[in-house]
Length: 168
Image 1 (cartoon, rainbow, N blue to C red):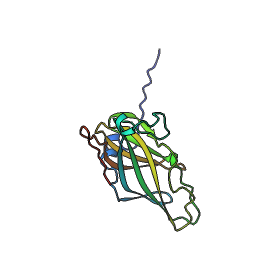
Image 2 (image 1 turned 180 degrees about the vertical axis):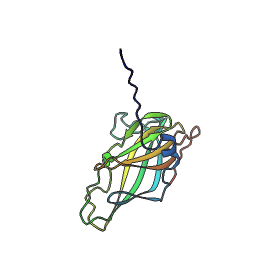
Image 3 (image 1 turned 30 degrees about the horizontal axis):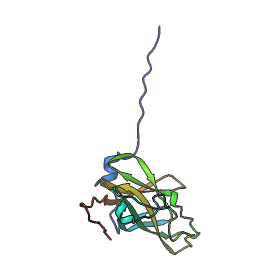
Image 4 (image 1 turned 135 degrees about the vertical axis):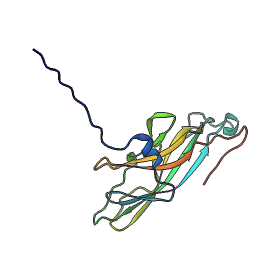
């Protein structure tokens, strides 16, 4: 005689919809293992059309083309530990409601270096996304324990024909 064995998997944690809805807002500090992290502000820089480029080489490093935008997240690390923290730009990803694939930042972040005990570091992380009005979130994944924090970044901008959109 045979026996049937059934098993189930209990998934712990918070579902994606709840994580997105409970994301920290711009200017709101969230607790981390080293102290806190704040998304200070977000800048949306629209891509350039062929006309805007005025003969610039299309393969230039860092070039953002029409139909896309560069999203710059300005963040502050606050180190409350008694030892230095080495922030890593690889800990940041951009999450979109139109894609299941998190985006890694592009280019070298500004303001990198060790965060000494009792100090802060202000830096930026850059991403290139389609200008499709998708909702955006910045995700920080702590490299030591894998815990994540989310920040709401608003939506990707979609400029009207012939207009640029900048938000600060």
